[in-house]
Length: 144
Image 1 (cartoon, helix red, strand yellow):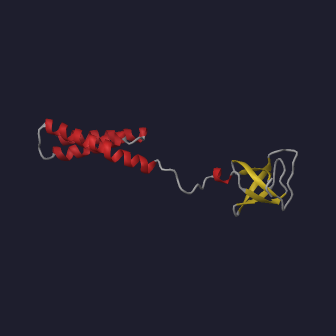
Image 2: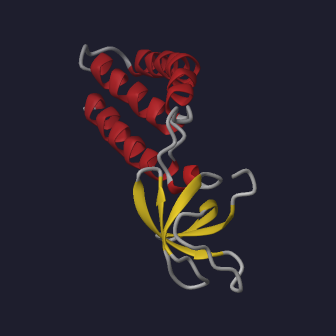
Image 3: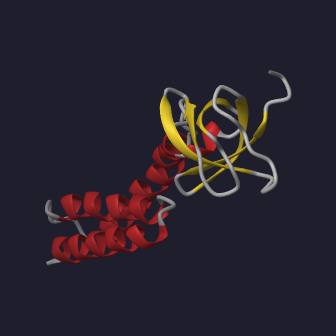
């Protein structure tokens, strides 16, 4: 009967971890799961509690820090749209305040000028100021 209680506790802690996401409840769920295994051996309740404490402390101080470091590591290659900001592109179709196209990082992007009064003609080099949705907001490349 005790192993069933520990198993239910492990499932409840595991489900609660999905809402929290900092691995603390996951470590406690794993400790409860380990204690359910110990409980199957028919040990007294005091031994089950001691086993849970040992599992929990071990997992919280040994496995959790390693997991957090591994999961919170920033990606080496940034493939988000934010990575395109600051890059240069070549104007393919006149870029005005509302429309235009540029070649950016090997693909064609819709573009618009940062300044509504400024237009960029085909062949000019522009710099991406920001990405708004699927449109690159551009300005003249002063380094070109």
